[in-house]
Image (cartoon, rainbow, N blue to C red; front, top):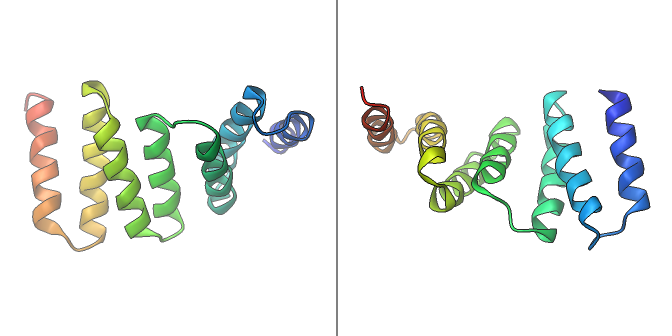
Length: 125
């Protein structure tokens, strides 16, 4: 993973912001950093990526996960809400499941129960 991070860092140095390769290298490096538990750095790259492009719901959910990992639960909830607002039907279930767990961490059990119920209905249970 260290080599992959170094390779992506080199791509970032070669391609300036505005170049699509720069944005993709930020996104890729954020994902690699998250896999090795470097969540703050992953979030920094993710936020920089979001300044350069319009993120999809799965990337917003990625950001929500990084914020949750570093203890920014309210920020995580805001990103989860943005992900849900932009999610297509197929992504809604995973965003709702994540948000339900997050709401439990925040002590918002009624809202968490509502999301969990929606997930159950969507999955046909």
